[in-house]
Image (cartoon, rainbow over all chains, first blue to last red; front, side, top):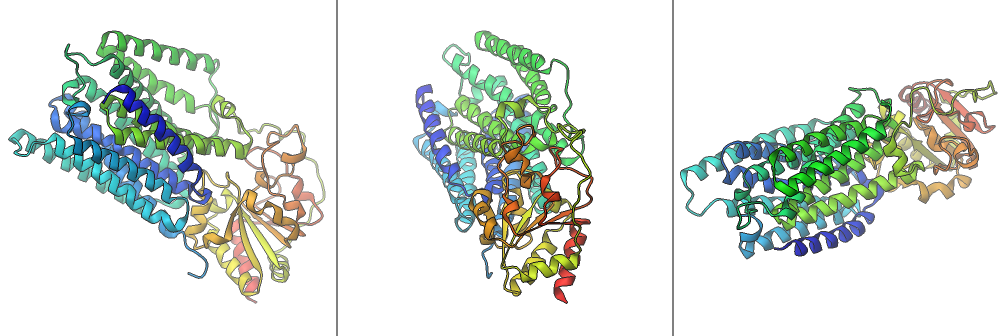
Length: 92
Length: 478
């Protein structure tokens, strides 16, 4: 994929993000931050490539990044789920 | 091989994971759809991880590949255990610190990935025919490491301030704007150097200076502005992920980065608007100094009325509608559970009880809603500022607990006040105002006196918030 193709995806995704985030109810802004935290750890993809394919220093950097991103992925989704489970309607 | 060499199915899988992340955020438009949304997010992440592993490890793996896979699985397991334990143990009041800490991890992970890609570009499939990294990719990875490093050190400071490990008061270096500007220019200079020659030293200098810049950017910002800072760092962590997505030509990372980046930017904007601060003035720092921006000389001895728990209970029992305005002080006093008990008793008496939430009521966007939800307050009794502010004229009791600046009419009338222009609750329109406060001495975050204390219809309930509500509950039970 060339730079322009990636850039197009990026720009369109920014617009999608803009409209999707404005539609998030303010009551759920804290879960929003927790879940965006978890999904931004998709950077683990880069860490996995480093950990799987290379040797030496960069594989250790990759493994360290895998640990950090995994803390975020598991912690982020779990804490979001915990918060969302608390939001109940009247007459539960 | 990443990016260029990937099979079509893998590219489609990454796209699918990006779409699932969009759906995860989309789900948060209402509490009912939010739980499904969270599961979409998990599915998206699982697809991204599995796709990467399958494309990186061949069908008949060599011994070396198996060892690498073993290490990877162990690394994921370590992270999973730490993450799940933290997620289970963390208190809801500590959510802002946790989010700041998580941001720092994303930032550091971005730095590590950028460094690994710089050291072994071939593994990432980003070397050209000349054996060098393409120029545009060099810029992308330098940006990735710079934003990641700023996110990391900035979030560490935000964490320390929110966690109370360091004073919330701004620390102001002389000429700090010039120092920051010089650092920024130096970062761009070495980025240019890395683009020009791909010299590793330039990469490390960009990274090191960005760490320093992140630290210096957040240190002068006061505790009151932390909701903006946490949102801003949320945005940065997204841009760091996006920059690495550009480097590795990965759709899932680019889409996610754009989503998270815009999300954090929008939340920062909402928080700034709620405090009537410009983003620039927040970033410039210095707001919320310990000795207050305007407090001096405004204190005069004026008459005010003190009420008891029994008076409060009696008045609220007779009321048709009570609006509770909680602030962070309520969470500090851990009064949310007994507050909900009070509301339940009032509802039994036929009183309509509503909660009114200011966007900056907590320590991060939406924090107060989570704290109330934890105390089993149904979310359909909780209203945002603009949805409820018209109702105070038909309200018998405005019950203010742990809040101060968000009900200060000076924001509407006093042009000299540091909080002038901030949207506030029109509590003065309610028949009775009950104001729980520890003593008459303290002032809010902004350090300004509050006209509401001295109003005819105001009853000051001076005590610890939890103790006072407990006493009201006792009085209601009689």
